[in-house]
Structures are given as structure tokens and as C-alpha cells.
Length: 347
Image 1 (cartoon, rainbow, N blue to C red):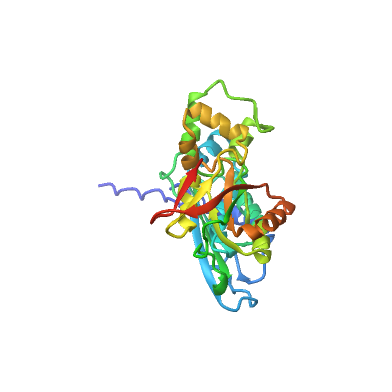
Image 2: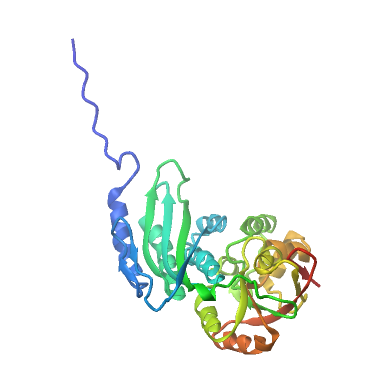
């Protein structure tokens, strides 16, 4: 009678999870995260939890949190091997949302999930995240890298981000003071940002083999993948100088669905068609998709990434401050009376 042979030992790496690769990534990330450190960080990457102390200059701090992802823009990052800017998108989608409440972003955490960890790809992505944090003045103090064999196709990954900011209780922006006659300023976007990419990808399919070489002076792929603009530092500077009443980050739902979120009932934003230029990128998307202006303004930011609502008496000075900081600013409309619901009209 023969005894059964003992089974061959299996390691975690045999199961598809490479702990050494994860450790190597952490070492690559540490100097990137270090560049984002700011006041308030007590303990960052490496611990079980990151520690942050709200700066003492706040008298009545209210914490504002936001979370988001990058969406199907990632599909193009995989296809075109352009991984170094989607991390900026990830940060921007959350910090711009936090900014809308009048808050200063304080710290950011990311979640990177894949089937098999490629250290170079992950480092490129996290490098973009760190860059986005630097540009918005918030600390990258932690995150999670999850290697999950069988969960994602080879070469693909997913991203999520989490931001916490703070605002003085007396300075929270909620749009309650917006009234008819106020001016609507639009800050130019850097491109499609990170919404509407399911339609963008359909346009690419429709135009296969007939894509333009450039759009707006950039190589075509760069124009499509241009990361979401970070408005934080410039808008916070404007908030410190001018009585801004409301801000709206133009994300999924475009101008038509995001502006009403910060308007009181009984008001509407009357936007003036043609008051801001349509870029070559958005003209190409509209022509390729064959959609009307209404769908463009509901699907994409259509050239306006952040909206500022301010009293007419202060709009010129606020616009000048933002322009001096590097923003392209357009007066795109006014607030008017309406029935019992907030809305946007484009005429």
C-alpha cells in the first residue's frame, strides 16, 4: 500500500499575488507622497491609518468629503498606454467637488485595484495622483493597492479617490444667497475632463481611420486625454477676496444638470449661447456624434469646467482676479426668476 505524496506547497505568489511587487510599489510611491506633505499631517503612508490634524487657523472647521473615480476614460488609458495623467483626473474630480462648498482640500487617499500588479504602470498612475495633490495643495497621506487575480483583465485596473477638506462654518457656500440679477461666470475646462467618455469612445469607433491629427494645437490623443483642470488654488484665492455666492463643478450631467444643484428654488441660470467659444475638440465631438446643443450641454462640460455665481457689482473684479491667476473666464449668463424649481436655460 503506497501512501499519498504530500501536495506541492503553494505560495501567495503562485496564487497570483506578488507581495514583493507591492512592497516595491510602496517604495516608489513614498518620495512622490512626500512632496505633497503640508501642515496638519501627523502620519502618512505606511501605517494602518493616516493621521491629520485640522490646522489651528480654523475657528469653527466643518469637514467636507468627496469621493469619485475616473470612469471609462480608463479604457483609453489602457488602449493608448497613457497612464501618467489619469491620476490627476482622479484627484481633480474629488477636490473640485470639495471646493464647491468653499472648502480647502486637506488630504487625499487613493484606491488602485488590478488583477496583476505592474509596478511601472501603477507608479505612473500614482505619480499623477501625487501631482494632482501638489497642484491642489492637499496631502497624499494614504491609499490601498489591491492585487486581485481574476477580477480584472490583463493590463487593466480601476481607480477611486477620497478627499477631505475644511471650511469655516460661517463661510460654507450653499447658494442660498443667489438672487435674480447675479452674474454667472464660466471658467474654461482643459478638455472633456473625466465625464462623457462612453460617448467619446463611440465617437472614436465611428471615426476609426479618419481621426484628425490635432485638436486645439495638441496631438489628437493628448487632446482627448488632457487631465481635468484643478481649480482649487485659483478659486480659493478668489474666495478670499470676493463675495462669491455659489460654485458648480461641471461633471456628469454637464451645464444643464450641475448648475441647478447650487441654485435656490425659484431661480434659473440663463446662459447665453456663444458667450464662450467652442473648442475644436468639442466641435469634433458634436459633429461626430451628430447631437444638438442641448445634448452637448447635458453630456459634456462643453468648454466650461467650473461656474461661479456672484453679484453683478463684484463680477468684473472677481473675473480679473481669476484671469490674473491663469483662468480663462467668460461671463456666460445671469440668474433670473423662475417658477418653483431651479433650472438652466441656454439661449
